[in-house]
Amino acid sequence: MLMLMLFHNMNIEWHHLSYSLNLFILYVVMLMNNVQERTKNMTQGRAELINHIQQNLITLISSCRSVADMCRKIDINRQQFNKYLAGQHIPSQKVLQKIARYFMIEAKDLLINPNDFKYLYEGLENEIPTTVRYSRQFNDFLQIARATPELMEEYLGVYYRYHYSSIYKGKILRSITYLYRKDALVQYVTIEHFPDLNNCKKNAFKFRYDGFCFMLGGRIFMVDMEEKQYNEMTFSILTTQHRYPIRFLYGILSGIASTSFRQPFATKMSFQLIDHGPLKKHHIQNATILDINDESIPFEIKEYLLEDSSKTLWGGA
Image 1 (spheres, rainbow, N blue to C red):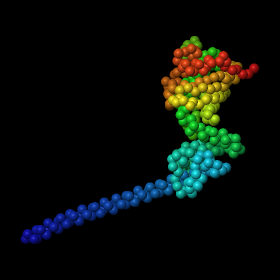
Image 2: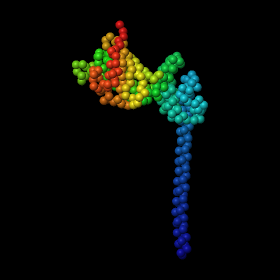
Image 3: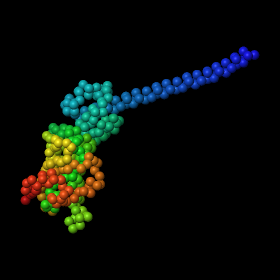
Image 4: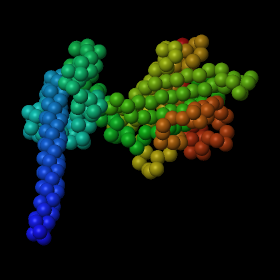
């Protein structure tokens, strides 16, 4: 009787053990299937990514006169680049950024669907006439634009810009200029406020200029256009700083006076770094007209603007 009871208990325990073992085997099988599925998806995702980059690079080089010249200018090994074109390797993020800067696109654009990329890139290309696109002078200019962001990284930020006003003669115009990086270029915006001389709480004139910066030969070249009337461009050249942190930049501004005579003029100009960005409302509120002896103007800037008698050079008859 005792033997029968023991045997019966062993059958129950074995039954439970067998059931648990089956559950464990089922779990392992499901886990392996899940891993295999994830591995398959990852492999497919990687293959798709390689294909996107490969096809998008092929689209890009179709607009290049010389792939070897492109590789040399962006410092990429030609043999390695050929592997990207063949879909054998994925470029690193650093390499993608180099390629993107050269073609004036964003690095993330290289990862999108080739059909979408072709539409995006060829749409941009078609805005430039073919005769201009293949002009040596035009492409030399583009090379300067493409190289500028890396060279100007430490100069990006919000500045007070000081110079003699072309509207309120003898006064100093303190405007706000924000240098920032966008679309693989260094762009900037300048905002000018001219207060009403009879009511300092009101502005008689407001102007906004949008433009681009170029670094060449250790100098910063700036060109912009007034955004409301579209009847003026200004040009500036600044010397770079070799002392850190950067506080002041000095140079020359030329443009057209916003008067009924619209005379060409040129004047000395100075930048004071006040923030590394972005541009905010409290920055813009400080755009105004000042007397040269105003205590808010830094001594270094006063000294620069006053160091000779020629405040502004006027052109035109």
